[in-house]
Length: 480
Ligand SMILES: [Zn+2]
Image (tube, rainbow, N blue to C red; front, side, top):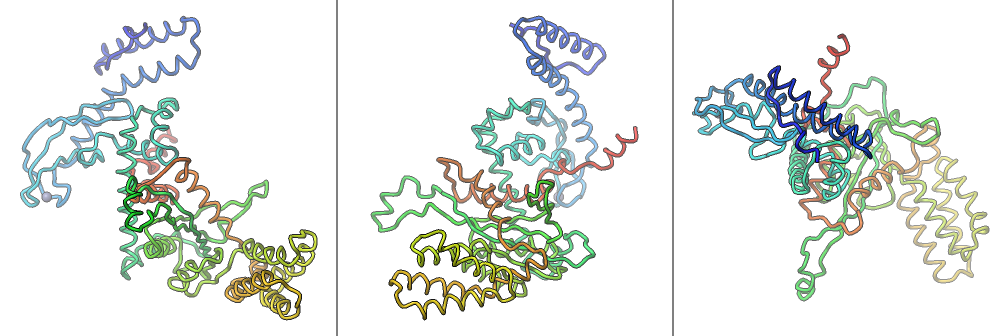
């Protein structure tokens, strides 16, 4: 066994460091000469050894940081009466457990105890994980279930985090993200709040089109789990599937193509909630303000034909141009053609071709298509009742949505004709939230949705201040 040659945490003295180095080299040398070991074995051992040195180094730096924090109340910034020196706090960090100590004091104004160093370290009360560990846990649970992350993180060279810690952090960080979301929601209810959100939009001098795409998907929850029989006795069916309302927003000029013609959007906003339409509407509004709603020359909304979407748009974005997804419209026409031509694909295609051309190429093309459908219903006498029914239904669809089918204008202005961006967004969310055998609780899924959305919106640094690139430090490093 090699364990007897593994370092313990060294003292940060010339002798301590020399001993550490000698021990680390001895271990690596021994491993190098052991048959069957690869460079991978050396890499793992090296990281372990570096962690041993990391603990006293990080402890030293953290202690200095804690001492540099002004000894004032973090709430009211008034002076604290020093009550105790060197109170111990254990913190799990990227190199292992740190034993930190700091002073605490009494604030006469707040009538409460405070640890100024904790605030400086970015440590919330009763949380064992360091800020960086919290971030790693949050990032990991967005990518995979906790049990999987527990196994994957050490293999990826990150720290070891138990599934319990990952669960706890996922929940806590989700709650923090949710609190930020609720703050946004509150801002949308006052004029000052709306102005504050609008001021966060990036400066853009050219007139621009703001595009908003909306859709919904469903998530499976286990509320009332185990009470199915009891509920059914009361004549209630347990509801396990719930809508997650989802939106994506971007400027028309943020849309482009890769060299291989794949559509890409360079920067965009996201909204996702299963807390109902009313909250969704507020969140979409907040994100739209952040993305320049008040300065947009035009707002264009793209979606499928769902009634809730257009009600929301009428309610909140009344001046927006509305466009129903072209692909969905074509599907509706295909359904009519399939019924009329008894699923004969060739005949159906022949009937559809001029209709599609009219729809996409002519101003007011949808009105022409609608007229064709109406004429057909009147002229064709030998139609079966099913065919009539289908045709009447689609006439209804075109009557409702014809004013949302300005595809010729959209094409001229190089705008999207479909809601592909939101459909792929929904699919991406579902990859995480709809794994086989996965059930969620309302509290669990809503907070993780908030965390995922915060991440996608590029506002991760609101939870993890250290995730902000340290410009000054980078510059200094480059100059050296
Ligand atoms: Zn105070």
